[in-house]
Image (cartoon, rainbow, N blue to C red; front, side, top):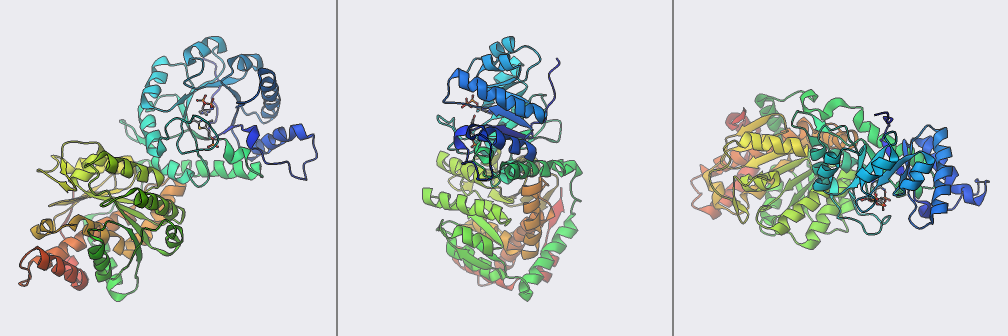
Length: 543
Ligand SMILES: Cc1ncc(COP(=O)(O)OP(=O)(O)O)c(N)n1
Ligand SMILES: Cc1nc(C(=O)O)sc1CCOP(=O)(O)O
């Protein structure tokens, strides 16, 4: 095969109808403004061009493609045409076909062996077929997000749907770009969430980003292209996506020391983190009080209107699925996106996610809309997110004996989602995708009150030192592709150790006579617990 190896990192699919008016500084013929705009995009860093013309006849399509090719040739950038095999053959350029166009295997016969061929895919089955046929050089996976640019859009897949396709693609030679709603503000989420773990270790990444409006509608296509490509390449320069080559591991003593130090900061009032809760109606009062008891400040708001402003003020966002409604999930998405934009960590408690399809879809929509730093759930919830049926849920509670191998469940889910997973139960398990820690503190009384899992989740964002680290890690993970690191892990372990030790202290009190007195005592002990209590009682083990 003599087909060229090309750089797919910034794939520009043209959209002449979206071009802004030519600026006054443009003095060329009005009909050539498209070409001048294209040339600026190429100069800014576009690495592949596809001419896509939906509303013109064959003659005009041919002319636009021919003249585009002249410009691309000057920049040594390969040109594809969309759908039109005849024009690709005439111009000796490359071809992109969709699922409803001429089948790829037939297109390949006429195209010959030297031209590149791209195919659109929207489902894992389409991806499998492309691999079976073996004629495509790359796939365009989309739509990732909603877009105004294309009519008759296929189902939106979100970054996690794109990841499912990359999982099928595995370490095949076929390249992959993502398309649909790719903009500077969605790219960090795409880069954070799409890498798919490979059976052989490491991750399968996207080879590039495909955009229409982010360049064609830009007044300054040079800067638009430069920014888009830099965002994509920024994550590639860091080797740390490979979990084996990432940040230094923390041991259990260090994690306990971190928890103790953070509690000291809270007790001294040196930090009073503001935590935005979008949570359920059952636990709202308890989790607000518990946040205060630890020395942090809660703000309980489900309003989509204030979430963007709040995200500039807070230390952390806590999202809880417990009594989810359409309106609340919309608010959570807006708040999550804003938190990502402002580099604030997001803790997600997927309460009852296994219970109904509605909850599953809500969790999936939310995780597609924003990248979270920590998922904290019970075994049923973690199992549902991991796609495992070994542990069943009844409503929002997990039932049965738990996972046979809980450590590998949390480790696998954390590595796949590229975040920290904290699974609460008699023993809590916390993993960053590489290491797993077991926390063996707690009291049986915790099972007797409603919302004890939500209370545990609410403890995590109270630990300010960890979250300022976590904040860096989230930002880096989002913008540079670095694996989340010790901040999220420390926060998750500290939060769970703190609530569990407080529960032990509450259970030992003579005034605890039943669930209700335990509940009150638990909040009191969150208020009274000292760094020494944590240091003496913490039972954290690296597995
Ligand atoms: C890179 C890339 N990916 C996907 C598409 C979509 O192509 P298709 O499915 O043929 O839809 P139309 O573009 O014809 O509307 C693409 N053009 N480029
Ligand atoms: C041309 C195209 N194909 C898609 C697919 O899902 O296959 S989405 C799309 C339009 C992408 O435009 P924008 O970058 O402006 O969102």
